[in-house]
Length: 193
Image 1 (tube, one colour):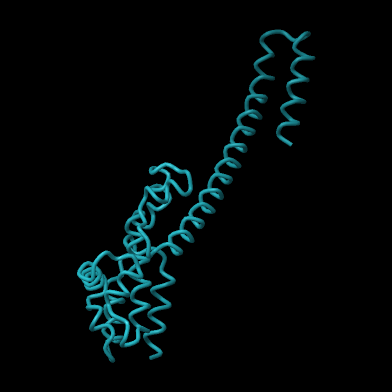
Image 2 (cartoon, rainbow, N blue to C red; image 1 turned 90 degrees about the vertical axis):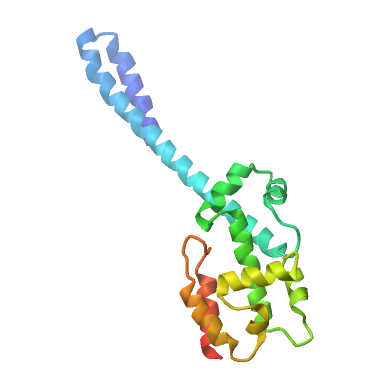
């Protein structure tokens, strides 16, 4: 619609400019420039919307990749190579999640807590730690204690779910925690037991 207006306006100016005094040309140029500005703004809005959609889609694909590879060595280099993107693009995508390292750490912690809550007595903490990408049991224990205020061993004991529920509600930090659905889900599970 706007491009048709531009073409029509351009044709009109060209035809009438042959017979028009120079003083009146300004009256024709201003509306044409306004149409051109509108067209450019519309294209910029469409480009922004398209870029946002592509970024959102890429973010979802990277999240799925991270979920599938939490147990392996996972860092920005691996992800950038896999998706053929720059580190600055990756960092920009995960900026609102506290950064890519924070997002991976949060996902590992969440998945490991889920595993601890349903672990059998035969499953050792170190095995759960390695299954979720932690390099040592000490690092695993320290990370869970810092995040949830309870050790992995204590978490596995009967009655510890109440302590975790209190810890979850007191350690909410919007900038450090990714999406909130998991926290709400875990909170609901802990309430029903």
